[in-house]
Image (cartoon, rainbow, N blue to C red):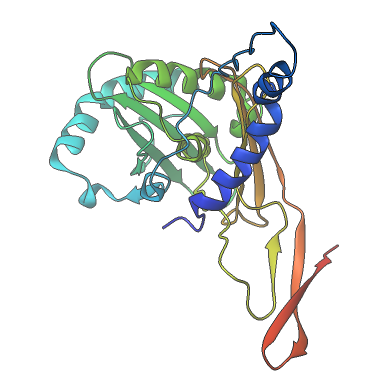
Length: 284
């Protein structure tokens, strides 16, 4: 269950998009006062994502092999030789040692089976990669290296150009006529890059605790279209992390960033018997 509620995000989105769009309505009102003037129609801004997606479509579920459907287990078995071949290109030693895997259920990209493979030989010797298997046979098995023997292969997977390229190929292979949800797409990218993302909720805060100050999740729409998705992964260890993904108007991921979230400490401030107030104190 994701702790994010869609309504606050849509409100933020609506406010931002309204500010970014050309002021066609104002132009129409102004033209009515000028004889012979014609209203200027508003220009549609291309947005590659749906903003009216049910909350259930956000969450990334993690399933053990025993929880997977029989069809998905068979698909994994059929793809193992291809997974081993591609893992070998990155020297991940897939044919050595004991590997385990879990399924990453990503509602935003339903036409792929996503798996995370892990080999844990103890501290300092952990290898992890994600695998993508198309369900419709219209694509290729792809892997996304996360760590090899506890080290990133090139640059960290969340910002790696190879991760971004693989994700773009996966989205093309989806071949869906429907626009995916914006937050679900962002969480799916984070999961494939190694996170178990849980977004920060908007429920009332009670008591005392530390919370990321950069919530809730939002999508900004630039003037020329596209999208910038930001969300905070509250489950990241040792501290929450902020993700920012920039897409062009056609939905191609251009850039990804992954940085430590600012943390604030919430204290209950006594006010009166009928209400409680809260203050936010920066944590060093």
